[in-house]
Amino acid sequence: MLQKDIEEILITEEKIQEKVAELGATLTADYQDKFPLAIGVLKGALPFMSDLIKRVDAYIELDFMDVSSYGNATVSSGEVKIVKDLNTSVEGRDVLIIEDIIDSGKTLNYLVELFKYRKAKSIKIVTLLDKPTGRKVDLKADYVGFIVPDAFVVGYGLDYAEKYRNLPYIGVLKKEIYSF
Ligand SMILES: O=P(O)(O)OC[C@H]1O[C@H](OP(=O)(O)OP(=O)(O)O)[C@H](O)[C@@H]1O
Ligand SMILES: Nc1nc2[nH]cnc2c(=O)[nH]1
Image 1 (cartoon, rainbow, N blue to C red):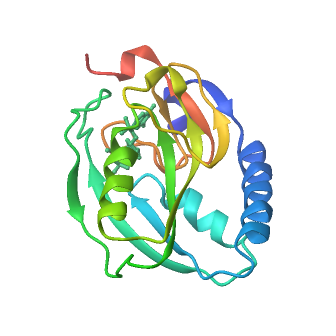
Image 2 (image 1 turned 60 degrees about the vertical axis):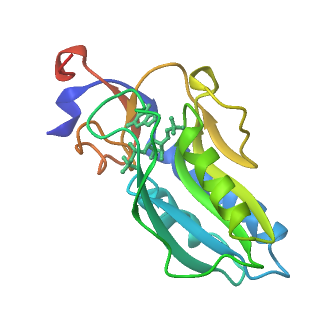
């Protein structure tokens, strides 16, 4: 049903799962002697985080932050709003921020500065997708799944007007779906 709206599949379910296993193995090695606080950035990071944590064989605590800067648009408003804050203090913690995509970089830049201010011991970024052509601030992730081209992508957590998050793959919508 949803696939009728998709122009092109960019990353298949199989490729995503392979990459998630690879990232999980790397994090397992890097965090073996630590107890990181993994912070999922809602809502987009949910499917990625859910799959990734099952591939990390190390002690790991989970928390979530809901921030939004896109609303129903495909371009960032530039203003990051905290919709839901953490339940846990980041002070003295090794923080792993889990994201679905870095585009302009503004969301993560905001979160990194916030967690620095809140005295996290270390802050690393894990993102499934990186879109370097969208970058508006200087920001690099520590763990990246895939580089994506300059297109608005959906699926596996990523939405257009709150739809398509439940697709198991990453794709691009047909032009007629967008309302602009
Ligand atoms: O690098 P940026 O340009 O800041 O874009 C990345 C952010 O945009 C999306 O979130 P959105 O604000 O759409 O919220 P959502 O996760 O609830 O869809 C995505 O999940 C990232 O958090
Ligand atoms: N769904 C979606 N959300 C985004 N947020 C920032 N970039 C994107 C994108 O390409 N797709």
